[in-house]
Image (spheres, rainbow over the protein chains, first blue to last red):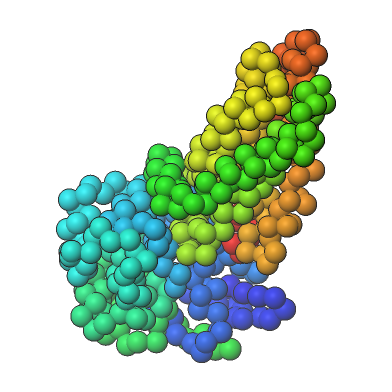
Length: 200
Length: 219
């Protein structure tokens, strides 16, 4: 039973769900219905006003770093540094997450994300969609089990959306889990699917 | 993994050199204004030198504190760092270390040169250098608490000063005290040792308080 209060407004309450390996949950709901708050709660940035979030039976608030080892969160602020190049952004972000990525490996992943030839440009020279691709490139190198993605498909072109969906499908078929807040229809061919609509 | 934090912040500082240089120039100019304003009264200059240099160092460190977390907060990299599988304590330590290297070490290195304007002797310049070398990490560490607590607030810069400057007072007293002692010819060792003890205490507690502050600010 999860509840969220922001300011003096109750965003949602009595929320209850679970996710098993290979499952995808899509979060929908009106603007301001608490999708981002719920995701931030699940990744541990926000403390639930009531209830608790369990990871393999343990409360995430007490698991701490052990839990962060299993999640990747990409919010609508991309977490891409303007001054760093696409390559540096990817390597630093993964390095901090505990995955060492070599230059060759990073170049390969960025190439797959359609950023070939732009690896050494500072991120501030990239378009919004390209910056998002840099952020999402992390998904292709990370080894985490649970992906929390907040409106990641916005400002991506159709080719990139297809690519990201394929990456998510692969993740799910390898027994991974994902919670995605998006208004776009995902229509993935792998994994089982559930939808959670937050009513305001 | 700590090296990724430090490496990243050093590269970022290099790509924004103007910010770093402005802190250094601020320090140099503030310290140089006093001899120009007071005139060539060696005795007076010599006696105010420790206080002037130390106060300028405190103020200069305030300039760089606002940047410690604010930029990372804006583009979302700070929350990414809090979600990495390593203690936030270490991340804070890495960031503060990088900030100290970039913003404080240049001040420490140039301070003896500025001390010459005040007619300080060679021994005193050495004490000034040593006291700043031990004292400035304390400024960065304590400052990081203020930077974390005022994260995302409008007018955070002024608030940081109000929060942090009072906490700097012991550093100022012992730091300037060491240089004073050397000027009047007594041993500065007691002051320097107290400063070192203070550094050890802040090294243990400040990153911990800063991580708690960051968690609160990001909720």
